[in-house]
Length: 71
Image 1: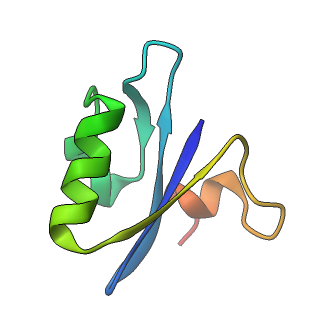
Image 2 (image 1 turned 135 degrees about the vertical axis):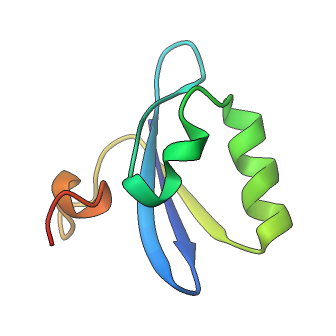
């Protein structure tokens, strides 16, 4: 499961694994690595960031772009 997170200064993603924890994160969100799904959601709400839950990466945006691998 992919969470696309939109903040005022970035758009990035984290990937949630089967154990309901973050298994992959964009560099700007690396502090979320190993966080639980509910912890990610709670943090986003507290920061007033929007998040979109998706089973896959949207076709218009590559995985590399979401995870900050393309500069």
